[in-house]
Image: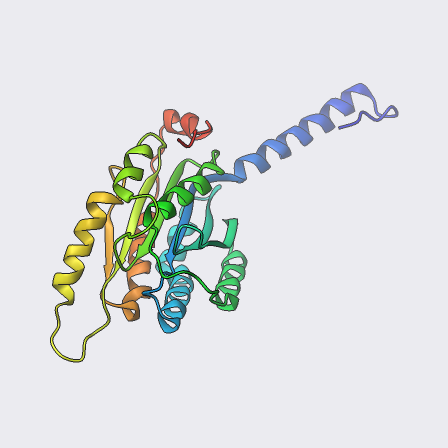
Amino acid sequence: MHRCSHLPSSLYAIVFAVFATQTIGSLAQAQCRQALALGLDVSGSVDAREYRLQLDGVAAALNAPTVQAALWDTPGSHVSLLIYEWSGPADQALILPWTPIMSVADLDDVTEILQQTVRRATSPGTALGDAMILGARHLAMQPECWKHTLDISGDGKSNLGARPRDVKPVLLHDDITINALVIGADAPQSGDNRQADIAGLSAYFHAEVVLGPDSFVETALGFDAYAQAMQRKLERELQTLMMSEHDLDAGTQKRDLR
């Protein structure tokens, strides 16, 4: 701020005080209470219909009244959202860069981006460990946020790239939470072993993927149930944070990604 020579010093002091107060108020309003990265599985096991159900499901979940209520639950702070898709080790793409979600208009913009996203050609592999590493790197770009959550969707076990069981210990000290949305097979024409199949896949994600004391695995019996499962997961992830003074101080410090 440049000092105007024609202003009396007392008036200048008042103007400066007002300017400083407004600046501090703006910074306080811009506080990020949670960085939330959504990683979507677009591997070879996900066909074109399932791909569309996944993106539309994220949009529907974000626009659910209960999720919107959770987003606006803490006045003066906001959630910052990023969405990326993953497949093989070299098939990862950003759909939505870090975006503060501070109004319904922001959600409308996110919805439009998801609706306009077209599937690209990818390899058939499932590099879940690499997806975890990428998500952690994205979260490291938001050091000012109080909480950092990686939300990974997947319909199968990792079969390429870094193994999740090797990645998970490396991320232990990065102060992030990793949750999972496990997607089971669609309803079969005859017989139904989906509950048994998804139980085994959930156990795998519990053991090798999810991270943090409050981490959890949500399930969807097929992509037709994805939107409802994503809504349940967002409602749980966006619960009001009870932040102590220590947590607030710690949340402003950068974390080194190992």
